[in-house]
Length: 94
Image 1: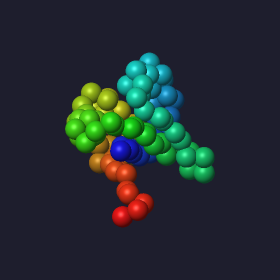
Image 2 (image 1 turned 30 degrees about the vertical axis):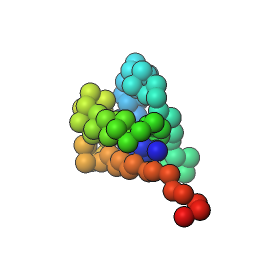
Image 3 (image 1 turned 90 degrees about the vertical axis):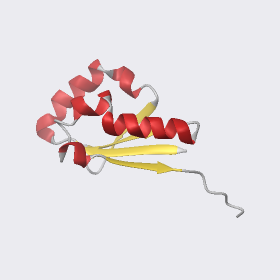
């Protein structure tokens, strides 16, 4: 499974977001954080839950928990500006 979160941080908030992110690095310990090379400021977080239950917990925390509430001030569109998708493996032989 893969939990994929995407959001935009505008240039005017980039430094504040970067400083906060660095100060709270543990919040991304189980995630890969990437920035779009052709669209600076577009970030994605990739998390790999081991089960559907863990995925549900991760998604709930990301939408409602501590990691989101502090960040929403810098995200374009605020809380509504985060997009979260959960992907599951697909059998290639079926």
